Image 1: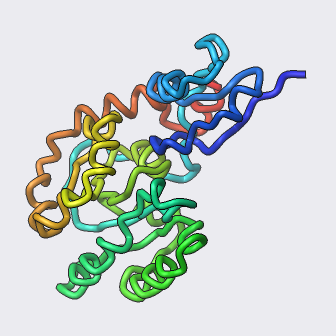
Image 2 (image 1 turned 90 degrees about the vertical axis):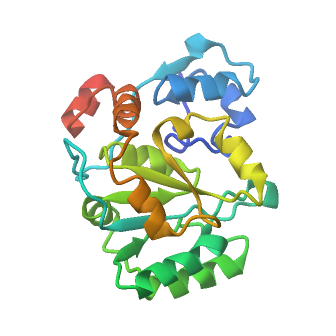
Length: 238
C-alpha cells in the first residue's frame, strides 16, 4: 500500500507543513513554491517523494482576462490559531476599519475562517458584529462577486489567485513578526501589502487601481495551476 496525505491545500502558513508528513510515502504539493516549503522544513523527505499536482480550484469560480476596476471587496481573515505565535489573523485590528469603510456607503462581504473563535471567543464576537454590514452569499458567489480579496496568510490566497483578481494582505508595522514572516515568502511578489495603520483603505485601493502586480500574479497563477482554466484541465493534469 502507498500512503499519501492530502493535507490542507496550499498555504504559506508554517502550520501547513508538519513532521507527520515524513511518515508517508509521498506528499502532495501544488507547485515549486509548495515543494520548497516542504523541503525547507528540514523533514526527512527527499524531493522525489513530493508529487507536484497543481492547485485545486473551487468549482464554479470565474476568472477574469484583464485588469478591471476595484469596487467590491471580499474580506477573508484567517482564524487566531491555537497559540499566539501562530496567530496570523488581522480580524481584531482590521474589523473596525471595515466597519468604517462600510459606513461610507461602500459594499463589502466577510468570509471568516471556519475556525474563527475556536481558541479566542473574542474573534467570533468581532466576526459576528462585522457580518451585520458585510454579509456572505457563499464562497463561490463571494469570489465571483468580488473585485479584490483582502486576506491574511492562509490557503484562501491560493484559492483566489485562480480568479486572476488582486489580493491584498494587511500588515501591521507596529507588530513586525508577521511582516517579517510574510517577506520570507513569495506573497509580496504577487500580493499587495497594506499598512492598515498608516494608510486608509480607500486611499490604498486607489493607489493599486492600475494593478501593477498583474503580470506577477499571472505568473503565480500559471505556476500554481499550470494554466488550467476548467475542472477538466485540473483532472487531466492530476
